[in-house]
Amino acid sequence: MCGIIGCVSEKAPVRDLLIRGLKRLEYRGYDSAGIAVESASGMALVREVGKIQRLEDAVGGLFVEATTGVGHTRWATHGRPSEANAHPHLSDDGTVVVAHNGIIENYRDLRAALEQDGVVFRSETDSEVIPNLIAQAWRGDLVDAVRASVAQLHGSFAIAVMHTAHPHVVVGARKDSPLIVGLADGRTLLASDVAAMLETTRDMIFLEDGDIAVLTSRGASILRFDGTPVERVPTRIPWDLARAEKAGFDHYMLKEIHEQPQVVGDALLGAIGASSEIRLEQLTLDDAVLRSLDRVAIVACGTSWHAGLVTKFWIERFARIAVDVDYASEFRYRDPVLDSRTGVIAISQSGETADTLAALRRAKVDFNARTIGICNVQGSTIARECDGLVMTHAGPEIGVASTKAFMGQLVAGFLFALRLAAARGTMSAHEARRLTDQVRRLPQWISKALLCADDVRAVAESVKDARGFLFLGRGANYPVALEGALKLKEISYMHAEGYPAGEMKHGPIALIDEGLPVVVIATRGPVYDKVASNVEEVRARGGRVIAVVNPGDDRVARQASAVITVPECDPLLGPMVNVVPLQLLAYEVARLRGCDVDQPRNLAKSVTVE
Ligand code: AGP
Picture 1: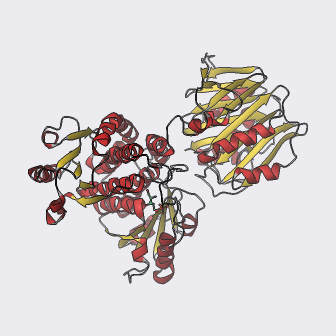
Picture 2 (picture 1 turned 120 degrees about the vertical axis):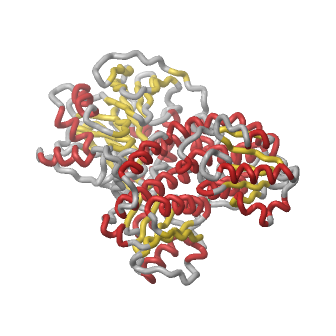
Picture 3 (picture 1 turned 135 degrees about the vertical axis):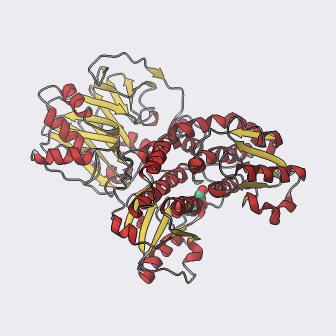
């Protein structure tokens, strides 16, 4: 997820507006940034690695006269953070500038064709194909060139385009990535979201997928990719700036919970081929290496450790290879049994967690193990030091309590397990196709799961003063129970414990009484009947059951004092759907208890110390 801003102004210079707008977009990505403006000698660009402040310092006193420009702040998905990979990108012939947010699935083919035509590329990014397609298609009309180019793009994109032959014009186009036009007196803006433009205008047009906007200083005309003109009615934005940066949500955490369908969609873009082959571009371990592995060890901390437990379930099921999952802080001081045929997977949102990094280095240096990272931050230490990498594409996660990054980790783990199974020949083509068809439906299932928010809010009201919680699950839902407990602990400061449902009778059942709500994941699957029996055990001792069930459940629901319904899906994908109500429950209880949801006490977003 990146941030784009553009502006065409009648008189007022745009440089400071672009920089300030980028600062409002920094939460969307901050590994590099840049601005491009029209100048007498063509396009002028400044791009810097790091945060916007570094860009502002580099721009210094430049561009004081410019009245048309675009800016971009990056969250790397293809190509490490560097000046060359920073946006905006300039076409090889120097005529077209583009800032892009999204993922171009077919960029390799497009790049190869352009290189065949003699185009020289200067970055590792997917985005750089766009200005070169437009430059190649241009025959005097910029809109026609943009239309011809976007027709060739597969994937997601929001773009802001300038051309040296079309001064005082910025063209925007969007498909599956947000893009908004801002209308002000004598200035017209374009941005990834409202926050970047609010200090200039509250009158905005939310472009729809397939829209192209042509901005001049007097306003914007909008047409469809097929050239048909269209009217879009401006919206007056009531939000203040703080609320705008959370897209209207009260907290970043809630915004990020609701971003999860998009996160899954982004993670799947380009990852599944037409014949269900799994394409993990940055994994860089070929089939022979994957086949040579005789076991897997997963090392991680906290929520990422829970993602590891779910990934274990899939790898053992699909690839038929033994998997251990270790807390990194334990692994690094144990005497683990590893060798060069062990695949060590380090899961880390930040890519900087000290314990996970130390465990990874131990695996490499002491045991010569093959290492794979599942990370959310391109260019982070763990991402750089692993032999292979699977990115989670969740975008910057501002809430300290991880939600969308966890979702991204689950999708990455699922895809890796399928990839490993394909390399080892342990899964039929039919099953591979069935599972990839199912995983493509995840965004809609998660969207439907989010509809339980009102029911969850009612449950939160009823349990906000409980003395503690028990979370129960079986199979791949056991780690989800652990994650639900951790979320609640982290942000509401209430005690909560996750447990395998089958283990409850071996001790924790002594805790059961009316004052200890028991949250049970009881969705349909191979162990549903066992979970239903566990629910009856809780009820027999006067316990209060909050059940996460599928529609039409009439066995567990009858026993529960509260029911939260989530859409039924393949049980193998259940963790991605079933975690949603637990995230929302933690959020609602914390909010009711007046806790600092986004920055809970004692916690840090990345624990870079032991
Ligand atoms: C998650 O909600 C917590 N903030 C914490 O457990 C986190 O998952 C853990 O510190 C690992 O962080 P990482 O994924 O960045 O390595």
